[in-house]
Length: 402
Image (cartoon, rainbow, N blue to C red; front, side):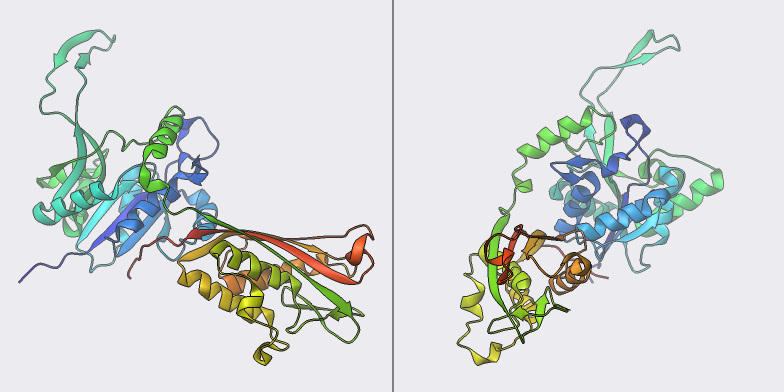
């Protein structure tokens, strides 16, 4: 009977990175505008090889990390836990979160964002076969052993020397035994392989890559930027930008609805639906970015089923079209133009409505309001208009099973 394997990954990001010389821990610094830890998580998720991901973050930065995961819509993809005083402590904490049914555990440095899916797969497969594996590269440079005074004592033979990287993968039972033994001996190791050696576990070497660097000092950032630029896999599908505009007349006897909020006013917007210009502009921007026409094509005023329709429900239909095309909103910026009434007191409720329908975090959608200083049809209070700009990005093609 074929052995069934399952894997989890512990991403260690619990350090403060003092050698980086920044008040911000290095895992939160950005490469190509994206935090390093997000790059790393996305690579592991994209492999579709892991049933569970555990992210270990500094205990004083848990809220920041949780917000970051929410911003990148990754909060449901990984378990977030607070790290310990050392890397070894952090991995031990992460190990406690692993589902007991998981057979193998990979440990990876959160600040190695240039690891490739193939390296991860190779290391995982090697561990399935042998029990434990570590990613590493052969030493190329000539090595010198020095005295305390930094004088050369001798040249060290390099033929059998390797530089350890991550991921490092082991059977979950072996890794737990290694951590238990390290605790008993009060042993502090620099990586998982050094702990596995304590229990006489054979660890096989898997070829890593020179580009799988661990970002540690400031000089590593521009180097990683250059390497990232050269990787074709990072470009992916091109983001889609869309612009939407709508305007409706103000008339007596109609409700004034903007962003799904019924605003008390002497006049309301005239239209076939509820005439919510804000939501209509957002719908048009999304459809435009997708190359799917405009709101009039999808919800024509000749169709009685849309008479007095709730525009938030129309937005829900547009978002389904967006998701069916495998896109999600990266951000949206909306400007409402109205002389009266004052829109500002209602902006937060409008934003909440749109975020709920779009399944987007609060940081993704922005709404502003302005007047035209009594110029034009909006200035004469004859109507209200709205502009919306959206950026859509592909939904990452990965799944994490619980």
